[in-house]
Amino acid sequence: MMRIHFLGLIFLVMILIGSIFVPGKAAFGQTKARIQIIHADDLRGQKIGGEELNILVGDVQFEHDGAYLYCDSAILNPRRSDLYAYGDVHIKMSDTLNLYGDTLHYNGNTRVAVVSGNVILQDNQATLYTNQLNYNRKTRTAYYSTGGRIQNKDNELSSSFGIYYTDTKQVHFKNTVQLVNDEYLLRSDTLIYNTATATAFISGPTTITGEEEFLYAEDGYYDTRTDITMLRQNAYMTYKEQYLRGDSIYFEKATGIGEVFGNVFLQDTVQNVIITGHYADYHRNHGYAWATDSAMAIMADATDSLFLHADTLWLTFDTANNPMQLTAYHHSRFYKTDLQGMSDSLVYSFADSTIHMFYDPILWADENQLTADDIIIYSSGQRADSMQMMGAAFIISRDKFGNENYNQIKGKQMMAYFENNELSLVKVDGNSETIYFVREEDGGLIGINKAVAGRMEIFIADRQVDGIIYYENPDATLYNEGELPADQFFLRDFRWNQELRPVSRYDVFRWPK
Image (cartoon, rainbow, N blue to C red; front, side):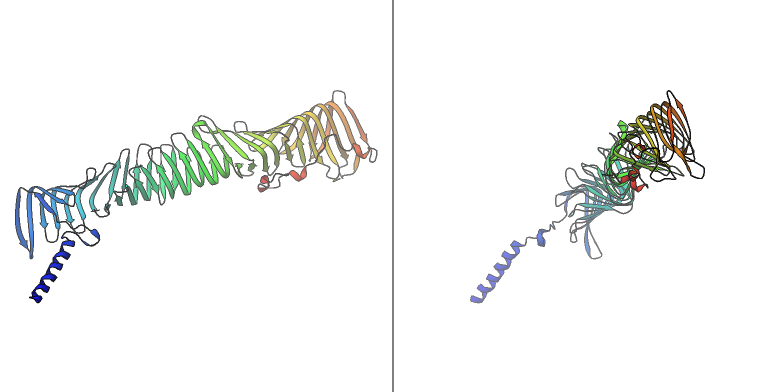
């Protein structure tokens, strides 16, 4: 009796253990519920290869773990939980997620569905079309490898390979990726797209082509709802005749606003101007752009370019988006092989190639230093033709035979004219004064000419004064060597600022203290 009681106890324990591990529940809570037959017009059993199969025909319906499957006909292996479905296949996985196709292979244990032929995966954010799709109900992941496309609202995306994470609404596209909408055509090797936010995340060489813009990057994102793009890694964009490059580019198509961060390079091929720096702000719709942080403008020329630096460079455009004017303000300095200058502010006009220098301008042309309250340089073909000097105009050049002697021209207003980039004629108007050293051809000193007049015309040859014509009450004296007192060798307000002169294109970044 005791033995029977002991065996009964073991049997009872086994029953209790069995009640804990309920059939249909796998380890770690993994569901293994059977595929349930809900309806079929015709159902029959058949044994093939030792397996009992259910063959269903006509308005076939199944249920498995909360999902419903509809088709025209099906073959079910109930022991293996293996199902083949044919004709108008439809899996309703939730109120918002549906999968359609011509044929289906579904395994209830792995919960993986392989759908072929006219496949459509549809949720409340997007619709996926492909010829064959694998859908894993455990991970809620769909992928295709034979080409597919996704549509949502205003965008259509396609690729050779794709993975759609239906929970996070993210699609990973690979190989021959293309995104099309009314604004842009995006082509890429690798792209991540969020169907909920309609944002494409760039993850490889990518081009974005619009009606007028062309953008390239290898990292970044494109928000298709707002048409806002952030480009990184080898990023650049073109618009008409303009090319823009930087470490990263932020661009709003609707407003035409763009920002460029790091290693800025803006080029306009119409005016042959280049802007560089470490930050730029671009407002296309309002017709201007500005750059700062080591900003430089380059007026490109095949033989002699002009390099201009300032704290801030401001570029304005006309209605056709062609550059009209470049403004450099605070600590502007420029370098050209035959012309250098500095001033607090400067304006360059592209229409007539003029440079207007404001606030303490200094200009160096060959051996001459020119200063005034305002200076306007008129040029043609990247060469200075003439120069207008207004207010306290002063021209100084060092006497080439005496390093401590200086030829000087001073007046209220001046017009200076150039030939072959060399100063050839200076017209002085108002309180004209000169001091120049008259020499023989071999350099021997003839005397020191000191003169005043209402107006003067000074002719220059070989970088030396060649002759002077005085107008309106002239008073000129030629002093022999030693006759002119040393304190009269310099006109009032004389300042020789050779140490301030830029000596190279890189020297424009130096602002003397």
